[in-house]
Image (cartoon, rainbow, N blue to C red):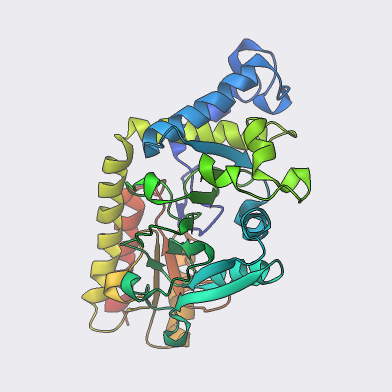
Length: 360
């Protein structure tokens, strides 16, 4: 069976090599006579999987020793509530930068818990860009500044992060973690649902500074406290064992590719293949994001009218391309070029776009 050209926004493509390795181990993991899905999460065999995933993530992102690496559940959507529940105290402010729908949802949850503030927003311009970091408003009693590093719906991405001295910087990196090198020490917390660049859906990675946890609230339910999961090495309750196993396999694959430097170079190459077609189409393809805010992970564009949008998507589907529909809230087209999407798929999409335009 031929593999589809998978441009789904999430759950998204996984490396073929990872899928094949998982297939080989599916019914008999390390001679246990069981699938990894059947193992006790307290067994030494699963403990090895758990620790390997943590170690590889620390290695690839160069996570300092004063950070915890947690494997949680509930996706980024639970983090929208869990962050203010743990970190937003009376008299403090949760400061949010709005760059798209997911940052709006994070703000909505925080408003239910404490005082909030919008430090910057590009909503009025249709979320076509990322705010200038120098123009973000900071309050002296901010508990944290929350940003969304990449915006899947609108196709924008932060290329320069705020540098904060007295405020904790928290980033939702669900859709671009591991796509490039970052300096983890500039953030107090990074969180990401796995289903874009890390693995299958079901596990959420939280990288959090220990100092932040020491000052977090303890008057919330145990299951929602970060300290609960940090103290238990993310084994307070049964973790999503298969998702963590697949996460470890994806991290192995990233390391084999040459780490984040090599992955970033390939992501730049893939995105350029498609952005060049847009820029050279004399307006036939119209990118949503401003050039200085373009995402490496989600390339959003429209054709001259809705009729051509529909025709493009229908012919692309017939040609074996999957997931090119834009988000239901904005329409148009979107190619999600996450780490696991091969260069060949982007080359094929580039040629399809050129041929489609020439045939109109």
